[in-house]
Image 1: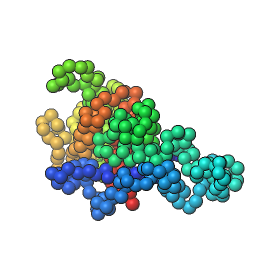
Image 2: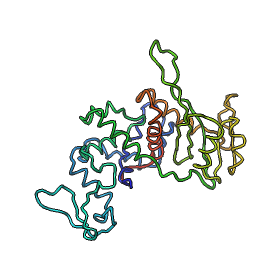
Image 3: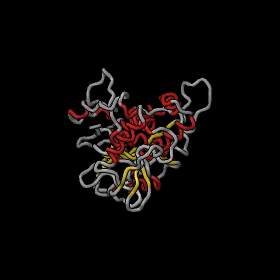
Image 4: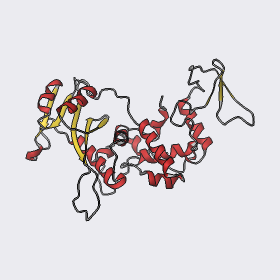
Length: 315
C-alpha cells in the first residue's frame, strides 16, 4: 500500500511568473491563504539531507499512533536495539516478524538512501513541467540508471485509485491531444512519431490521462464509461465521436472549435482540459523531449498527479 505521506511532499508547486495575474493560470488557482503559506518544505529541510531525519519523518506520518506491523496490522511492536540493529527496526510481538516503515512501499529493499528518495519526490512533484532523469541523477549524485529507476517507481506511486471522476452535479471535460510528430522549424534530425493522448478533467477536481494508440469511438467510449460517473455533465468539443456518447451522461455540452467557438453561456467549454494539455506539452517540449510509448502511462500519471494535488499544502 502506498504511503499517505507522499501526498504531503508537494510544496512550492505554485511557482508564478511575476507578470502573471494571480489565478490566471490553471495550475496557479489560489485556494485561500493556506497556499501562500505552504512553502515550508524548502530544500534545506533536514529530511532531504539525513536518512535518519527522513525515516523519522515518514514514521510520524505513516504511524501517527505508533508503529504498526505491515503484515498482521498489530500495534504491539518493540523497537529492536543493540549496536548491530538497523535504525528504525521493530519486532512485532504477535507475528514475531521484523519490519521498518519502508516495508510494503516503493522504498523497500532499495540501496538508495531514504533522504534521496524524498528529495526525488520533492523535485519531481514540485516542478510544474516535471524533472528530467539526467538532471535528477546530477542533483542526487546517482547514476542515470538509478535515477531512471527511481523516477519510474515514483510515477507508479503517483497513479490514483481509479475511482470514477465526477458525480451528481459535477462537470467532467474530455479532450484529445497529439504529442510530438512535428518537424516544423527543425533543420535536421528525426522526429518522434505522433502519439495520441486523451484526458478527462473534473472541474475543481482530478485529471486522468490515457495513451491511446488508435483514437476511435470504441476506445474513447471505453475510457469515458469506465472512468466517469454517468450522473456527471460531460463537456467536449464538437467531435463527431461524442455525439452519441453524450447521451449516456446526465447532460452534454459542446463547443465548435472549428468555428473558433471556445465557450458558450452556462459554463459550456472544455478549456480546463485545454489548459491541462498546455502544461503537458510544455513538459514534453521543454523537459522530456520524447516519451516512449512503453512508458507514456507513467509520464501521464505524473502530470495527472500534479494537477490533482495542486490544492494540497504541506501543513
